[in-house]
Every structure is written in structure tokens, then in C-alpha cells.
Image (tube, rainbow, N blue to C red; front, top):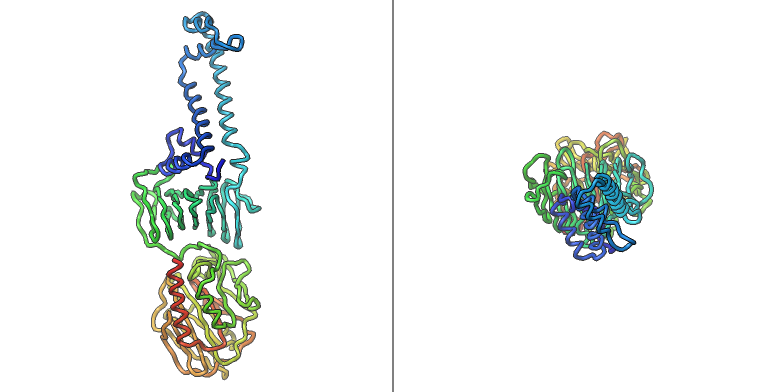
Length: 518
């Protein structure tokens, strides 16, 4: 057969008259393009037609069928046909033999159809997806630990971590724990609960995600599905999908809707129509890679001591250079300690409903010039107070910190060489579910705080105390009493004070990248 997806299981639904409009459209398109599939479709329909014809035979026709055995291997017995039509004393025996013969033939056809559908080379034995990579994943298949990189058709449960799967046609699927899904075929997934994102190239058009409340058919796009609490949400970032509301046996094609780029809908169990909702570009992990964005290039050109892009990796807090890498601290939360980053890729997720409890760097870069800068993106999931972004202040040691104060305002602190700690505070409460670019600088004379490229506070400050081995914390403090409730991304540390021009350029570039990555 060709490289088209295997749509033969739809033959049964077609013959029974229960095929959905979307499935019929996909089948018809495939039949037009694939001569092998057309041949198989005709063969199946011939078998189905033959079985239907047999079921419709009358008693007389059954008896006639028995008496029309070939004579000398060439033609039927005319006398046998006459006796069957006339109804002789042998008719009951003939009818019995006809039924038996017909049953044997029907059984043969059914067995042939069964074997045809269950060919091990093209169906159950063939993998429906390939595991590209996983991040700290605990995946169960039919209740047992999943081994290997090939996923067969079956029921799966992702208890922890993240999965990156590839389906037919180059379809890339990202699944975030906790999630339950059935891999039905190389073109169809049933998502019972959890979050799933898919990137579908033209070769994968027709890829379908089914949920308890809807069916989502792709037309070459990027979209995400979230299933929880009797509702399914569909968020489309590029292209177009068609959503068929309702459970699999209750779908009404007339209620189907097309969802385009930058649109989202919610389908609630029992609701008459899908509900339009605002798209959320930050909710879903849509890529495990950290692209080579211009913002990252600009940070590197500014010569940071250490740069933490917070990529999605098992090995924890990856730094540039690698000797300043750290570890991700985890707990017993619901979701992984990773989330979509400010642009794309990953960020460190802390608190809220996730297992992330912050990060720790035991061998941080030295800060010994008396000057200092910190750049970071922060994102709050829920209202928070006294929550830590980054610090190395602990037990009278260290030299900087960035956190929320008791009122929910950003607050920066630096410790001078004589042990005094200076504080400055922003002028507005940090908004929820919005990325904010924050920069703290200290040049030995002034301590400054910038939010989204603008200077929001400053005050006189002495030279910053030296620090070369104080543990660095992200999203928490050393006592784990100031846990952040959200995400932290793209942290860079400098041993000099960035200028206002440097900071404006960083923020301007970040805005361009954010607009490009939505």
C-alpha cells in the first residue's frame, strides 16, 4: 500500500452506515488518491455484500443452492433444480444440507475478512507511534510499565513527566502528565484526560484527537487539547481544525465547528453548542527544544557570568557555561516542574499545582567586582506574596535577592561589603498569567529595578559584597519558605551593571520574539 494512513478500519463503519461525516470525508479523499486502498475497499465490500445476500436467501433459494452443485465439474444438475422447485419429499433434507453448506461458506468468508483485517504486518503488530524522547516520564501501557521506543495500539497512562511522540506523516505530539490516552492508530488518539499538543505537517492532515466530549480533526496545523472535569478545550495556534462535539455515539455533524488560528473553544458534557473562549498560548508545552532566538543571542553578546535558559531536560538546571549548572527540586505536585517558556521551549515551573519546588546551584558563578546585574522573566499562576524569584542570601551570606514583598510588589535586595542590605520595590502588583521582564542592576552607586524595559525604582547603594561560593536558589529560598507560584525563565547573571540602553534593547528584542512565537 502507499504511505497514506491505514483507513481500512473505517470500512466496517461505512458498511454499517455509522461512519461520521469527517471520517467519510477522509476515507473518500484517501480512496481517490490510493489505488491499493480502493482495491481493498472493493474486496471488503464484496465480502460484505456476499454475506448480506446469503442472509437474505429464502428457504426455497437455500434448497436450490444445495441442488446446483456442478455436474462433472462443469454445470448444475437440471433434475436437482426441478426437484427443489417442485418440493419433493427430500426437501427438508436438502434444505438442511443447503443451510449447512451456506453456513460453512459464510464462516469461510468471515474468517477471510477477519484475517484480512488482522494481518500482523499491517495492523496490531505494527507500531502506531514512536517515542522521540521523554523527560522523567513514568508511562504505563495496559497497566504495565512501557518499554522500548515503539508504541503499539493500546491504553496508556502517563503518571509523571513529559512525552514527545511521532505519529504517521511526521505528526509530533507532546503529552504532559498526568494523562490517560489510547493510541488507536497512527492517525488517531483518544485523550481521556490531560493535556496534549500536536504539530501536524501537510503529510499528516486528518490526524484526529478524540475526547469524551468531542472529536478534533486536523487540517495541517498546530493545536492543543485539554481534557479535565467533564470538559474539553481546543486551542488552535496555526491552521485549522474541525471540532465535532458530543460523545462518539452521539455526535451531530450539524453542530460541528471550524476553529482557526488564535481561536479556542470549550466543549462541556451535555452542552448544546461549543463555547468560544480566549486562547491561552502559555498553558501548553508545544516543543521540548530551546530555539536559537535573537534574545538569547543578545544576552550572550552581553557576556553574562551564567545564563540559565531553563530548557526541558532531565538533568536539571542547565547553565551556560555548564560548570554553573544546578538541580531542579521536586515534590509531590500534580504536573511536571517544566512549563512552556516565555518564547517557546521550557521554563522552570514552581509551586501552584506542579511538582517543582525550585532550583538550586551549589557551585554558582563568583560575583566579586562590586557591580551586579540580574535579568529574568517571571510569570505568576496565582496571587502570591513573599515569594522568591532568585537569591543567594542566606544566614548573613550572599549578596542579592529578587522576590515579591508582602503586598505582591517586586522587591530587589543587595548586600554591601559592610553587611548592610539595601531594598527597592516596584510600583505595581505583578499581574497573573503574564510574562514580565525584570532587571536588577547595582553599579556601586545606585541600585535600580526595571520592569518591562522601564526603570521603576532606584536608590543609592554601596558596592556589592563579594560572593564566590554561596548557594544560588531559584523559585525558593534556602529554608523553602518562599516558594514561587508560577514560572521562571531565561535567568542571566552579570558581574557588571547593564545600562538602560542594554536593558531597553533586551526588552525590545524579547517583545519581537514573543510576538513571533505565539
